[in-house]
Length: 315
Image (cartoon, rainbow, N blue to C red; front, top):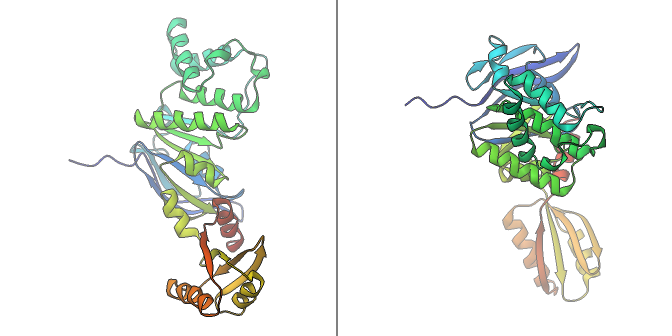
């Protein structure tokens, strides 16, 4: 049996704005049924990539297929299976929520008023806005507006969804609900690619993700795989000794592969760049010099720390 094509298949995509390279030979495949995250700092190339996926921008070169459809050869066919949610999409302030969705539903699907009502009510329920149907759009908070735009994106049951910063302005509860909504959509057969500049946010929402910076793909995989690929060579250690922490800190500063040794509330923090064997020797050296350890913990870099480090290294 021939395997199904990737839901999103990007090959050697490049987007130039004059002399500026926004997307630099991006190749990426997203299997069907995934919630896939695209993360990177401002200027990484995320929005330019999404505009190409949404058939709103012609790239300098490269190919893109959505569920096997070449979006440049058959853009109208691609748009029928595509749902695109731009960052901070506007909504009409002088319309009620249901009026906005009903008008959008008529444009997307046609049909009679009863069928349209059934569909937009379903979408409002999916984004936890069922009780706001009669509210004016201008009365919605930023997070509620984001959810309303997501409901509009769902109206025609897209197979592939491109969501640019959908969690922007959402509170923690709304982000949790968004995560559940996306997972339910993926379980029903949709494939979702979602962007953010907050890596920890995507790590919670996505089954897999990739990191971009300055238009280039730096790493992709599960959240743990990406963390491992991006992590700096130095390991952060926190060491506690039974007595004389000042002397222990001074001894550690004199050892190879240590840096940034500091003492806070009797606990010694440092960065260590040696091998695991060298780390074991370091701890044995503490014992040999009369310092009795009560704890040694390895600190993991936060996703945001890693992303800042990557951006600085590639700037």
